[in-house]
Image (cartoon, rainbow, N blue to C red):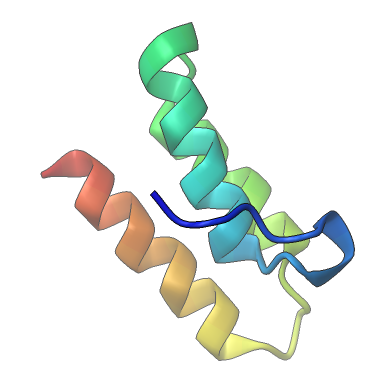
Length: 61
């Protein structure tokens, strides 16, 4: 697995990916992680939101 980005450099998608990794061991809901991800995105950063959606889709697979 890759390195964990420094929190000040983490995108919403990075946070979501970390949350999904944690969700498998803690039982957290991937959808909850998705909402945390989009909350971490800048409001005008459509790419970040798109990454959050993609990571959520991968978690659902």
